Amino acid sequence: MEQPKLSQSSTAAQAFRQRADRLRLSLESSSGSYFLGLLFLVSVFNFLDRQVLSIVQEQIKLDLSLTDGQLGYLALGFGLMHAACALPIGRVADRVPRKSVLVGCLTVWSSFTVFCGLAGNYVQLLLMRMGVAFGEAGVTPTTYSMISDKFPLSRRATAISICSAGIPVGLMLSLFLGGIIAENFGWRLTFVAFGLPGILLALVFYFTVKAPQRGEADGIKEVSNASFQTTFFHLLATRTFLLVLIGSAVKAFATNSVLQWMPSFYIRKFDLSMAEVGVTLGPIIGIVGLVSLVGASYLADRLSEKDIRWYSWIITGAMITAFPFLYLSLVSGNYVLSLVFFGFAIFCGNSMLGISNALIQSTAPVQMRGMASAMKTVALSFIGYGIGGAAVGQMSDIFATGVPGEGLQTALVIASFTHLIAGGFFWMSASSLRRDVDAAKKTSGSA
Image (cartoon, rainbow, N blue to C red; front, top):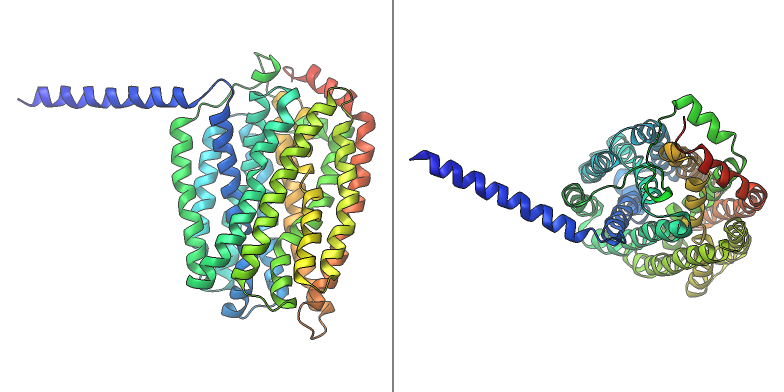
């Protein structure tokens, strides 16, 4: 009597698996749009959970009786953990299925985001933020290397920019939704609300996505593994890769200082609430940044067909132009005018994201792309998320005068000058770009 039941159960399970496989195959279009769409959502949650601290830190500061320096150390702890984990995870991503690595990382950082809302004191919150950093360290090494294996060089910057578009969208939602939720329900529930959906996304990604083969987009069927030492020193010896790496890290000092502290600056200087800053600043970062990122990458792909050096030239021009607009946004005495200037600064600054990541991937051999992204993550994490946020917090305490926001204003103005230094490194990268991209193609497939 039991045998028919077992048979029926087995048949039902098999039918369910067949339907799931058909659904997965139907979702994976030949253009990779579904694959790219889910990576876009991963990027959204990456920066949603990372950046939510910036809009709620004034509330945390009051609740836990913290100084700006201590808030800066939250960024330093995040940055150091992010940097420490990026290379090992990048190395793993070059050797094992990248989809599993990404899903595991997404689950980890989403869970620790929830735990941030349960922190009872400063030390616990610092440890939970470091847990978020541990998970997020695996995003760049896995996503950008998979995209580079899915899309050829002529479409790579655009594809990466679409994935990277999740960055401004995540930033926008972190400020917009974070400000509203925190204003009405407190900073703890904000962390919980932001962390839970990421766990669901991890399940969807695991069961519906098929990752591309290594070297697929470059027509390379056999990819040999290179040792850690060989990979590390090969990449550092690649002139274009090294200059783009340094330029990106220097730019990150300004970018992450501004992203962490600009909401607090506006709240203090113009006596605004978290919700008021979130619903005005968030859309500017999200919408303007999205248009800039995708538009600049598309333009770079088109212009690079005539001269590949346009990748470097576009970023150089954007960095030089971003500086005066950011400076004006910081010294303006009118909130609306400051937002206008800040919007122009975001438009210029965000244009580099997709292009710089495409440069990192295209100057690295196929078997080294995960490691290449990890090295960039280390540089950005340590210089940008870590030193940048902590330095501005310390300078804010040093330059404080008793006038709300004045010390923080001085610190941010100093940080904004790094745009000009970054532009110089990207300008220098143009001269060796064509040579290093060709060399990467020749090295791919051999250890």
